[in-house]
Length: 121
Length: 121
Image (cartoon, rainbow over all chains, first blue to last red; front, side):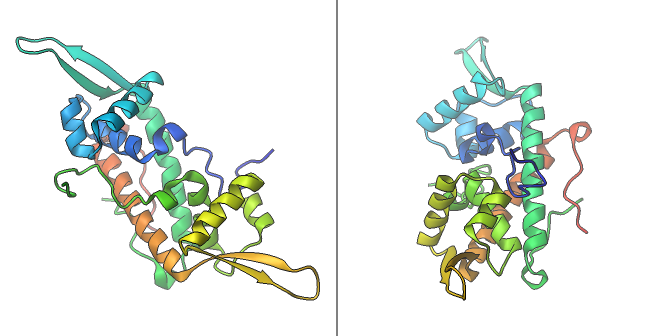
């Protein structure tokens, strides 16, 4: 049994579903586009292969982080990928834990080797 | 061919060697302990199993990020694990990219759903 105090560098909040690099890219991109994006737009923004993007989107949809919506208009039906409200909350909690890693790195680095931290503006 | 402009959410600097959660924990812990730690100390701080910690340490040593040093004193020989100078530089570059992900998340999140950013103190 461990907790944050006994294992200060364990970071249990780094949820596997978000920590994979491709999924981190997809969720960050979808947070920036709350109205959703098409497969092609996501692919261009995240630089993932068809197969990888497809796999990650379905993994995220399976746990309710991404909503996949087929839209039918006058032209061809199109599919839009959106982050869900619950997904955004979970992802932001994950990002909080990432920030605590970064804080620990900055606190651990000798002062003369430090780089500037995140801007707060 | 892509670059940062054409794929703004690709994050190529998230090096696989550091991004795995256990290795992220180990490197953050070793940055905070520049004189090195024993296997048992690292294990307690990062909450990793024997097998996982051992596997990660050897993966990091193989690419020159971690130095494994056997020390012989009056008692039993002990092994100390340290982050190398080059390893620290590479890890800090990786952490820079993590910070750019976090910046993108904060910029993408609607203002009313934002959480406080990293402190700059």
